Length: 88
Image 1 (spheres, one colour):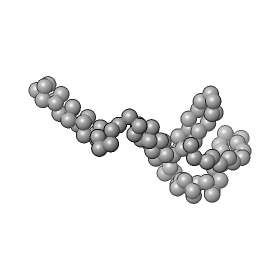
Image 2: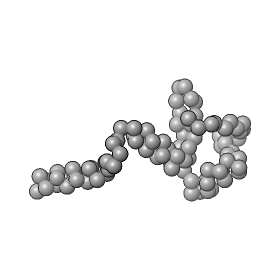
Image 3: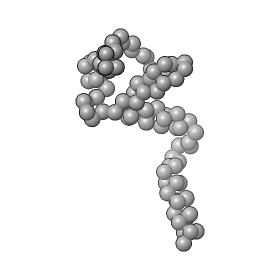
């Protein structure tokens, strides 16, 4: 796991949390355009990430189960085409 940076932030009366500008810049977050995902669990209360970061984490986890050179998307398309041929 990569080194983790810890920040202290305050919660406003409205329930909003301000993400410091240095963090927004580092993550490439743009007001009104960037989606942030919050994962809430028991052992690590809140994990915040962008959609791109979450996608990359999922890809890295799945890479352990897929042989090099194998394209699951191509296999899925081929399966769907076979199903479509059977249904006609």
